[in-house]
Length: 465
Image (cartoon, rainbow, N blue to C red; front, side):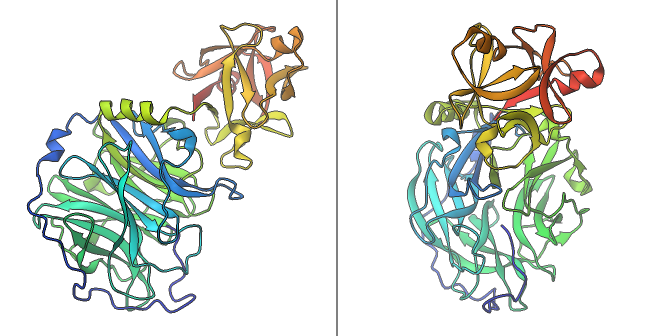
C-alpha cells in the first residue's frame, strides 16, 4: 500500500488502542491442526490487483495466479479478476489469502479503489472460499471505531495462545504516524479488541507476519520505502523488536515472506513504490540472521502488471483444480536471459526487448501458434494486432500483416529449441535461414548466426507469462 506524508491532507490523528467496541461472536471452538492436514502443499497461490504505467491495466478486482516453485507465476482467468468488490469503495488493494484452521480459505483486502490516499475506511473486504474456485459470503468487516483514519493492507494469522485470529492492518496513531494494528476475530465476521500491535516510533505500514519459526515470530514491514523485520518469541502486541538489515530496490513496499517448499530457502517479495509495480525478491537461508541477498531476476517472474500480492501454499490437487477452473493464459511473454528485466515486444511494429513495465502492455503478449510454414514449428501472433506476426525482413524482426504468401509464412516461422545459454530456457531458429536464431542486438531483435557466449545469451529467452 502506498503511504502518505503523515499529517498531510485532512486530519487523521486519532487515538488507537481504545477499548473494544465491536462484539466478538461466540461461535464455539475452532478446529485445530489444519496445518498438518495440508503438509502435502506443493504449489502456491497468489492474490493481487493490477496497475500499469499509464493505468491502462488499472483493475481493482481480485486477481489470482499459481506457481509450482513460488517464483514463476501463471496468471489465471487471462489475468482478469476472479471476483470484484461491490461494497465500500467498489474496489480493492493489497489482497491477502490464508488457509484457516478448518482448511478453507479467507481473502482479505483494503477497501480502496484507485489511488485516493485521503479516503478513509473502518472496513476491509472479506471473502470465504473452500477452494479458491468459488468465493462466497462477500462482506465488509469493521476493524475499529476510529474516525478519519484508514485500514490498509490487512493480513491475518492464527494466534494459538488466544484461540483467535489476529488481523493486522495499518492505521494512524495519535502522534500522526502509521502503526500496525491488530483486531481479533473467530469468524472474520466481527472483530474485537483493536489495539496497537507494533509501533517503533516512526511510520510503518504493510505488516507481514511469519509465525512460529523455531519458536520465533517475524514481522516484516515498510519503513522509509525499505523492508525491515522485527521479531518476538510471543504474539503479544508491543513485543516485537526491529532487528534485520533493511532491503530495497528503489522505493519498496508490501513485504511478503514465503518459505520454499523444496529447500531451506526463504524468499522476501517486495513491490516498488510506483503505480507500474515491479516485484523484486530477496533470499535467505535463515530468518534469524535478518540478512537477505537479492535474487537474480532470471529466477522469478511476477504476474503481468501485478501489485501488492499475497502468497499462500496450496496442494497439487488445488493447483490442478484452479487451472481447470480458471484456465492458463492464451498468450505468453518472453523474458530475455541476459537482460531479465526486459521482455520481447513490438514498438512501432518493430521487434525489440524493453524493460518491464511499459504500456501498451499487450505489445509484449504473444500467441505461440503452429508455424505458418511448418505446423511442427511456431509463429508469434501479436495479441493486440492479431492479423500481424513477428517475422524477419532483411534479418530484422518486425510485426507485419500476414499477406498469405509462402515467403511471409517462412519468414514468420521458427523452431523452438533448448536455450543456447541455458537448456531450461528456449531459443528460436529461423525456418528459412536455419543457421540463424532470434537474438537481440542493442535491444533490437534480428536473426543472426550464433557462436559466441554473448550471442548465445542474446538468443535465449524464457517463455512464461
